[in-house]
Length: 177
Image (cartoon, rainbow, N blue to C red; front, side):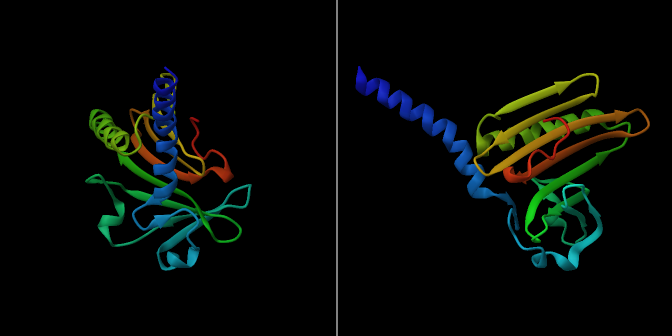
């Protein structure tokens, strides 16, 4: 009986910490890794904005289309956030949809969610806010957090899908979590 209980606890522990380990080991997206030095991307960084906590957020502008592709889906914008020591702490990929493409945004969101669940298992947290027309999922590792969000902005503004990866030491960067 003790052996069965031990094996069950081991399986549960591996399941819970497996997600954390996989997310923490990945620590980013393609060649964008949390803690990378800003100099790695400097020729592609444009339009800096500094936050209250001293992080500088840049638009990443590259002609390499594969940089903007996630699971075969093209994103429109990559934002990179660097701390005061010029270390990458925040990666945000955003895709914009026009006001007639909400169903397409939900379909792509669902496909990306399924791909991420294949990599990192079930999310740690789910949010849904009908008043804001938003849906989100969060995977929390020991060092890294990954969120995906779908937000409907209104009839005239369309909707967005966002994938955000950030260092847990900076706190949440998503408005829904």
